[in-house]
Amino acid sequence: MLTHTGTVTLETPRLLLRRLDRSDAKMLHANWGSSEEVYKYMTTPIMPNLYDVENFIEKKLRAYFSPDFYYWGVVEKSSGELIGMATLTEVSEFGRTANLAYSLGVPWWGKGYAREAGAAVLAHAFETVGFRKIYGCHFTENDRSGRVLLALGMEHTGQGKNKVWQLGRYLTYEGYELSCRRYTKLKRGRA
Image (cartoon, rainbow, N blue to C red; front, side, top):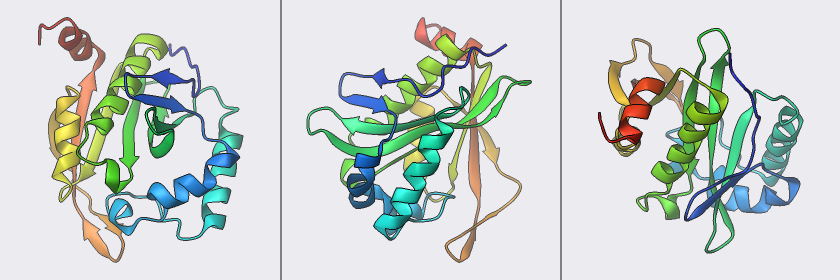
């Protein structure tokens, strides 16, 4: 059985993962929500207008009432900038599984922030909520995200059988997974 917490605040040495609020709209829009470079690797639609971001945040604010909803804004502590997001989607009570997803604005790529945020979410998912397995995936052409998932301890499970229609083209994706057992062994340094 899962012990849902909803989107509680998580902290790492360099990041604060927290719920979004209405005051985040301009920063979210500027830092990643309207970036074509970011959204070419995402399955959700780009948010070209501030109005789109405001609607997006309103939906998240309503969803935060659900204890099995996990969506964090990722804040860089040193600057106070909202630089991206991390989430657990496709939560399955029966299987005790979920899917890890994350996205950062381009200026914050290559700094280890995706791995740091992902590690905090995985620790919470396994140690507090009680998930049995967490999945991850990325579009095949986004190999940097694959390196993040591997660095988090996930194992590559292969290329997805279906293609995803994204920005006028069909894309393949790579799948990954991390079991609670493997996570615990990695944490103890025995994997």
